[in-house]
Image (cartoon, rainbow, N blue to C red; front, side, top):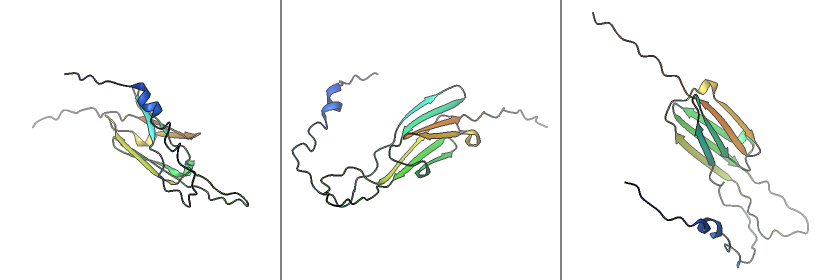
Length: 142
């Protein structure tokens, strides 16, 4: 049975419109917010899966990908550099440090020996080739 849901396109855009608008800027001593959730697109071809994951603010060395059979995990960490400037007072800072983790399961096992990863401008691109299924053999009964 199909379920019908009502979608309002304005809810997503106007949720944060007035968030913090009437608040006075305050000085933050340490950022406490974690890294945003890793957003990604996963597509499937005949011989491979393709993943495009947004990991903004992380350096290439702080992004890690783990493959175990058909399970893929992406983790990232960002750190804020503390800067003090003479004569200036920090009113608000929204840059933060933290960790993000995302794991997902695919339909087929991944050939981790030939998997490829690129990280350019905050976007992680994974090419995950599918493992070829071993041909079944028939045993002779003696």
